[in-house]
Image (cartoon, rainbow, N blue to C red; front, side, top):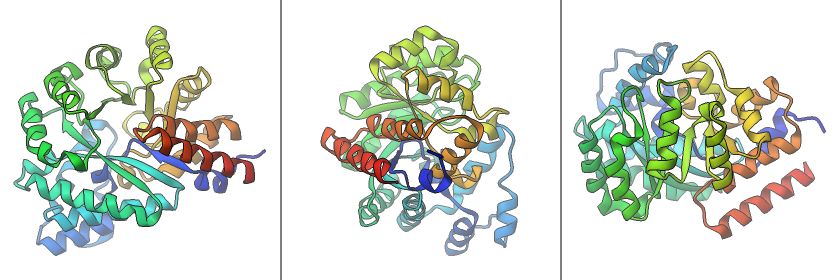
Amino acid sequence: MTVTPDFLRALPKCELHLHLEGTLEPELKLELAQRNGVDIGQSTVEEVRATYQFDSLASFLAVYYPAMNVLVEEQDFYDLAMAYFRRAQQDGVVRVEAFFDPQAHTSRGVPIEKVILGYSRAARDAAELGIDAELILCFLRDFPADDALRTLTAALPYKEHFIGVGLDSDERDNPPSKFAEAFKLARAENLKLTMHCDIDQVGAIEHIRQVIEDIGVDRIDHGTNIVENPALVDVVRERGLGLTCCPISNSFVTDDSKAGDIVSLLRSGVKVMLNSDDPAYFGGYVAENYIALSKSTDLTREEFVQLARNSFDASWASEEQKSRYVALLEDYAARA
């Protein structure tokens, strides 16, 4: 049967690679700037949108982090997350495990509890939209390793509000091993672990090896460069480790969406799935990533259902929840 955009948009799915700060649309950025009296140098939505321009990971981050200055109060974090959850509902998302970057806020004087509690309140209210939402606290890898430890220690009194920890931001000269102690503490606190292994970075394969063999993560974010090492592909397949792929954002920070690698990994039995990363900046939420992949590959309807199934299988939901999600998916696939 034909794979249509409508089929892909309504396909029940889980989003596992989504930065809440990356959902800051120009309209909300301007609204929060005005609410909090923050001078962002723009006074119209069009002017804000014009600043969302970049052609590499580094140039993206140079736009991304300054934009967060408009996030000041607990309500701001709530409003940002709720705006994303409402948008995700339109894309068939029934579960999300969303990243947030506390250091991007605490480093400019925002108390960590405002960040965590604002996002957590929104995650709780997402249930009213039919979305099960969890949070993943991420460390900024271009900050010192001891700052990650301090951040985790400060966040632990609020541990009930997040399910795991991750690692993101600029990967250059910031290998996973740099954060081994913070991740060791997180594991001791029974938190789940994931780390970004961004595409086409210097030392990409060694970084993937470190997250698998040295850190022992439960999931890998991006990670498609693993195709360069068949032995590591075998390991992730055998362990059932998920790779949270983001084709649209890939094509912004490099000249390749990695569609071919995603298809190859899927067909070899690796648990890959599709996500939107920072959709306000890359111009595509999760359904657009499914649609983009359908336009650039020959994936079948059954293979897109498998991508959605992988998103549930790779999630940190309970086995009972996973069974419920997969049943919903299979019912939809049978009827649509």
